[in-house]
Image (cartoon, rainbow, N blue to C red):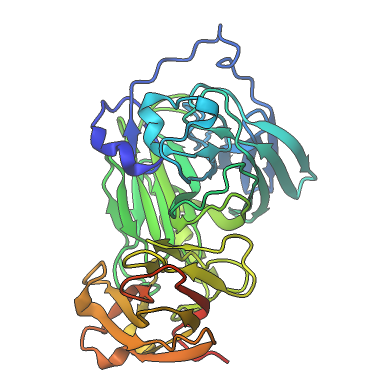
Length: 456
């Protein structure tokens, strides 16, 4: 799961999630009731692929194969693998009712997952149906780091099959008693674990997306790699080039790798491949959060062809904050919270407040101006826009432009001529907006849109 604990450098006996914390995992003991697991499978099969959700593990996907095959690609060594939902928020450590997290996972904080916890207590399915066309599961997830602590949220999952793909929609409805707005954190959307034969982690990371350029193989190692997937997909394939791909349109940040000996092992064995699309999100105490992804079974060329055939035409981003944050998050700032009604209201009461957009990919030549539709009340209304480039990742003063805001509390559209900077060139991979250099009590900004095309 979360990458914070990788630096502990523990022995590679077991892998779990973003960044790949490693720890020595005891073997299954069927004498213990919560460790003896009898699957309760619900399947869909369209004659091309077969997928199965375990209703005794919160509806996590524990089975995926070609139809008619008994070869399952999905690893279920423990409850932290499978293909499943996994979300993160503060505090760190998360100690509800004084209950301490398992020491290895204390750095994960609040982390409900679909299958169960690290002590092998299973998540509870509270509703499900399967009419042969759609498989639906609703569950109460478990907090992975804690001993038998259900999450104060609901997970829902809808699965449909189409040719050699599974179309999946996931939803989390939060109802936390702790109403603190914690900082944005990476979310696994979803976590995907394969068995040992599917160890070659393939993706595309270069600056010529959707042009047939050569894909690359990421290292089969721990800790997990992290990269910008400029075609929004990754795949774990075997030595014959066949396996499982995941595509999430509009998601550019991915992580993945392999643990243990490549090429060997089945669903109950430790060797595992891992991949996940990531977004950094603020998970409010009452958020209703959805995401969609596609699982693609086949040869690498077939996986990539599907992505090419179904991807929308690439274009510079337009962020309209009508009912969500559009994957933006904050540093040294908070907003008015969920739900979002037509705008973000961000409080600017700390030093150097920052609004940070999601990883993206567009060409500077296609978007010379940035438009910000905003209203502010601030004592130092000098704003700065930063951008990152494919060849120069991260934000710096060198790649920025400053402009004045009108601090009258009314909406204005500001046109920022990015092309005026010689540093705005090539492929652009993200934006940051600092409304003020230093906030004061009572300062705020209201934001309707940030767009690389003029608002209508």
